[in-house]
Length: 137
Image 1 (tube, rainbow, N blue to C red):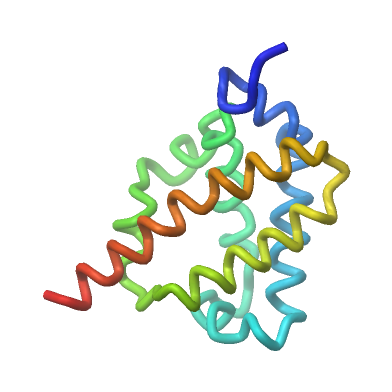
Image 2: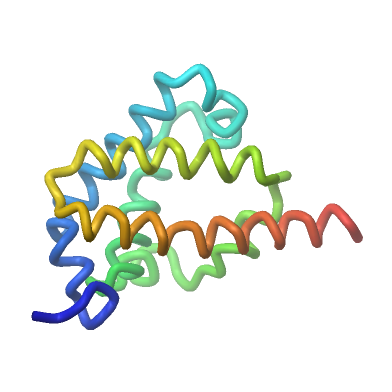
């Protein structure tokens, strides 16, 4: 059995496209309903339709599935894309907390949930560094 991160094992563990879309829907629902997330929610437009699609497409490819983001939106550098906003450690932690809550709602193995949160911390940290570099110029 392939390990998470090999081939499409993570994509499969997440429930493929439909499972990832459910995660994204739960994530944004949590962000919308959490008073503590307002500082991060303000970074998004009122209509989350495109943000939902972009995150779903990105996660599909990032987890080893089809590269839907590239097909629909082109190449992306996650840190460079997010550097336009002042994303500090507090914003990162709020985003990760909303995502952790959304992941907990999924019917996934505990091993995959832990793996995914560990993996998500990597780009989240890079976004903070990229944002800091822009601010420090």
